[in-house]
Image 1 (tube, helix red, strand yellow):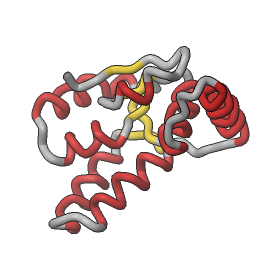
Image 2 (cartoon, helix red, strand yellow; image 1 turned 90 degrees about the vertical axis):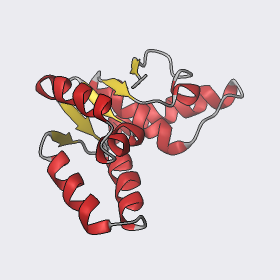
Image 3 (tube, one colour; image 1 turned 120 degrees about the vertical axis):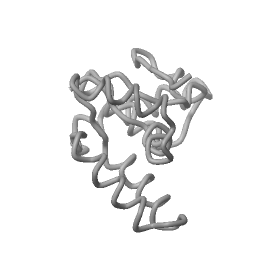
Length: 131
């Protein structure tokens, strides 16, 4: 497993953005993962969006190639340290993003996200964007 998915990559995939589909297809052999936060964000978008049945089927098919990771005490400790450090620097970001970052750091994964503004504040976190 090499990559952790953020919400925006999954949504772009589900919307059929060919450049994201191609990149993820090339990465799937190295291993794609998702944490419960991203799963919940995507599911909320599907549940309250248009054409729920269609996107739920696409999402379930997409998940066939993705390992779902659990949050655990080690990830929560990483989260707490990240949050405290960012708070002390006046650079705090949202808890969901911090939990995603803590998951990536704990599992030594590259985060696939377009949210550079928040995630570049996390020391040691490697990012890949779709652009």
